Image (cartoon, rainbow, N blue to C red):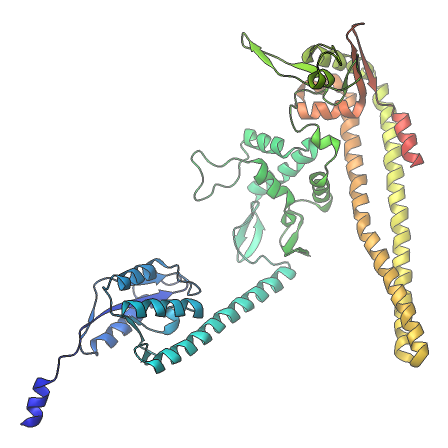
Length: 516
């Protein structure tokens, strides 16, 4: 009777509002009718039903496809907000690593729960944060969970590095020009054509903006993205630069700063890629001078007849729907009429005059033939020099390699003072071998120079042979390139009214090159 009265007077268990939190790192399998999140929730729900006074809140907190490395998860943030608002007393999870895999984040969450007067329970590990022993055990488990996450990350990085060194594609956005099939890159012929055309246009025009404009005009557009702007994507200077600089298209796979032979098919040959990289790295006159105002094709060539300084593009004036261009004396623009009184000159008239003189000079084809002979001799000389230097360096590498092999065998055989002397010789030979191999690798730039010179020669001579026909079809950039390769200087005498165009002396150029 006394025991019955004691049981009747015992206080009712405290009611605790419980929230179940579930998480899965990937989205794989979430489309199934009963997935991992459902299994976690069902197990947690059964645990809550066995506890006296525990009730489940109506809100669900499920994060599918979110890592435990951080707490930037939408459902988890909602849960923490409800804890702060006093709506949740206990957070119930299947395992402690469902909450977090970062020890630092876990400690911060525990402090936040403690401030709100809430607790945390892991149903498969049989402890909670309601007592000191449970908190100690949980911190130990979290340390192991973080260690496991870091080990997985390291193994993943090592796996990616090893795959890249073998030339394998390791996933991510599929590069333009390729498609992904069986976790490998295969050629997408429609896009590959655009990539090859981009390299061809760049070698011809040397301007990334021109390449982008030409591809857009032809309708050879980049791949549409999922979040592309209205009207479809267009090529830009930056997107063209990314294509031109990517070693992927030359059959290489990059990891860090190192390149490895890729197992994917290449879209362009090594010569084309090296030529493009050479042009991209150039900061010479050819690239700079066509960067702005390309329609002023005599820029850099036209000189003032009074002071001898350069005539620069002047401002344009529009009247009655017409555009007028002028060349202005740079001295007058900088220092005023006291230093030079030359007036602005009509650009179109001077350019037409120079083009007419060149048309006359190239009409019979003799000028093109003479220049071709000179340039062919220069290319042959460059190629011969390159072959001779490469042969000499290869011989040096072979000689140094043989010497190091012989000295290495002597080091193994000898002892004492004799061994020290041989080791000193071995270090000298190893240094000589490294130097010869470095110079041989650097010689690749000379090979690119010869290839560029040969391609420029073909383009230049071909344009001269048909100057009258091709001039009107050229872009302003290519017109400027041709004139700068052919014309040494154009001067206009304002007092005499004489315009003089001097062609480049190719005999002198060839002689100077041979003397160098």
